[in-house]
Structures are given as C-alpha cells and as structure tokens.
Image (tube, rainbow, N blue to C red; front, side, top):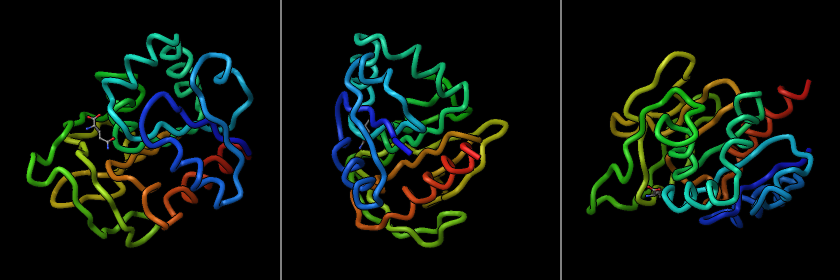
Length: 184
Ligand code: GLN
C-alpha cells in the first residue's frame, strides 16, 4: 500500500511520520508529476485552506484530485483538509463547514472524545473548522460540544482535529482499514 500526501502547505510531514510509524509507504505530492504516481489513497493535511486551494489550482491538481476522489480513491482530510472536501472547495463531500469556528479565545484546544468505531481519542484543535451540517450519505463519527468534528462519506474520512499531532495512531489505522476494504 502506498499513500499520497498532499504537500503544498501545512502539516504534511507529520502525516508522513505517522505512516512511517505504522510501516506504510507514502510519497509527497507537490505537482502533477508527483500526483501521477501509483497510489492507493490520499491524505490532505491541515494548514491554511485558502493557500492550499490556490496552489492546488496553480499546479493544475484540482480537477485530477476531485476526479480521483469521485472515482472512489480513499481520502483522509484533517482540519484544512476537511475544508478542502466541502461544497465551497473540491465539493466531493456532502458537508457544510464553518471555518475558524471556535473564535479567538478557543483558537486552539485539546479534548479527549469518543470517535465512533475507535473509542476515546486525543484531539488537538488548531484554529479548527467544524461541520455545521451533513447531507445524505454522511456518517457522523465524533461530536465535541455539539459540533461535528469527524465524519465519513464512503471513501472520504474527515477530522476537524489533528490526529497526526498526537502519538495516538488509531485514526490513521482506521483510515488504513478503509483502504484495505477498498482494495478487497
Ligand atoms: N484555519 C485553517 C483554515 O481555515 C485551518 C486550520 C488548520 O488546518 N489547522 O484553513
């Protein structure tokens, strides 16, 4: 299994480190040449969604990535990566997102919360979004203070928090489970 990690901006190195810990091969995507390598899944990391969108457009990556996700490529989007999948960006996932949703005081915070199918998970939020509403086909996986912070729609998994910034590998393992199921 090999996982492509979008590396235009943000916390891509931490995802690669996490996959390395789990013994999963990965490569970084900065342009179309990188993207065209063989892959079983994609991770879109946290960072700044406006910057990621702009560079993605400049590199001609937007349409190929959208098409691949629509065709079923498993994708994990964390924080800004979650935003990238909403209707205002790639539009592959049936979610409405509120950006920088916790205001100045709560710009960054830590929580431990139930994640459906995993259990209690440490969650680091950094100027995070949350999901305001979900449409058909979206399964809510975690809710913190009445806000949806993780969800799945078939091949697409999103978290408002940063699983790659903790030592807990279970969200990545959950994603790897999705990839294995897609490959069988
Ligand atoms: N605030 C960022 C955005 O709106 C997301 C923050 C993050 O990825 N940690 O894109």
